[in-house]
Length: 279
Image 1: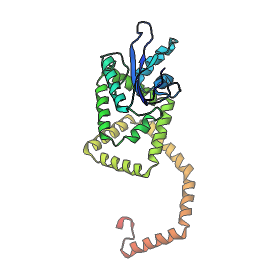
Image 2 (image 1 turned 90 degrees about the vertical axis):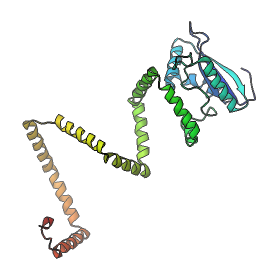
Image 3 (image 1 turned 30 degrees about the vertical axis):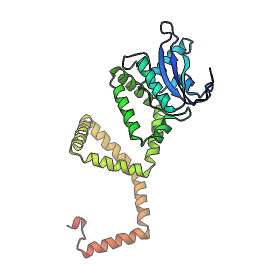
């Protein structure tokens, strides 16, 4: 592979399976000067084929690997600027066409011309860096909307997402994300306010009421079941009664609490509210 002083390049993956030889299956853009490292953008797709974000491309790479083969990975062209590399990537996508749109053989999910510079920055770091770039965000959203119009791709993505989030790895990741979010007081306050606002909407309150009614209908108990639960509740109360009474005694033994209760009682007596509820 020839050396070049230009920092950016475009690359192409070609299929090598019998009957598919020479078919372009993926194009991309990289910016690593050395192309023989494990982390080079050119080889990164093949090295992480078992957990590729692009389910369609990852599945094809695993199919090739299962046959004991590896795709042909070549540098298409070197570029002096990232803008030129992006333009070339867009041209290559248009030239070979997308499988998701039925126009060609590429497994790319977008039309090209977007992505991160360098081979070390992750997708999370990239969007953290560009999350205020409205033009880029709108372009990405438009591309995703166009891509998701394909029913087959939408179904595959849905199945892949469900399978991942129901796996142990997915559950652990989701748990970690939610814990980190709820640890923030700002996030907790924001979510509580949002939930209150939602629950005060008439349609939401009606929906909640119907859901509760249905739940009680499903839990309709026979007389025997009612008696059994009542007896169980009595047993629990007997078991916890001593603990609860001990706790009340401990609270009432506090001079501060006794002083507050005495002051409150004196105030009620002065107002003529010596009986519960002022009766």
